[in-house]
Length: 177
Image (tube, rainbow, N blue to C red; front, top):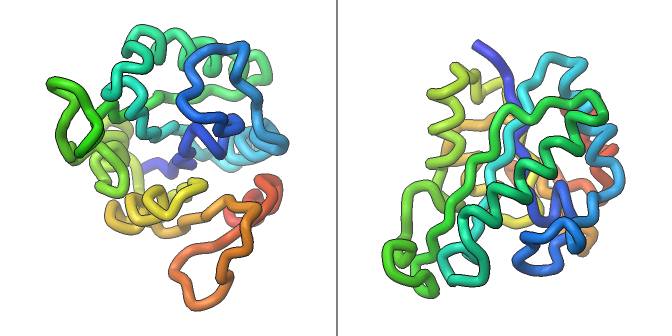
């Protein structure tokens, strides 16, 4: 079985300006390429797991999201880093429109995207790492059985008495791989 580095997108890979779906608004966070390059060297599969309620709210289409995801993956590939797959959940339990109005198992804090990745790539979650910028990301990782869950936050967060790690710089995450 293989190990994975699960990454949230908005707030971990790119600055979270709210509903980012155009490359002109896509700014990579400092350290993301160093982190993913180190993960690849250690044998991790890099997988993105991202809630994208902007689709469900009607702000942009799934096609818009796929275009920006392909562009993002190419930027990583240009640096020699393969993103295996981008899993996304377009649903929202209260603000979704039509078929997107539901609390789907794929939407974090539920573990659906991670479980799907585990099954598709034969992953060992006990030897995997998740990095998110929101407590719902961490809850998703814990629920799925990911052993190492890292909250990337520049805010003051209680760094003790948690069952997750807190970092304020992505490069600091490398030592937990």
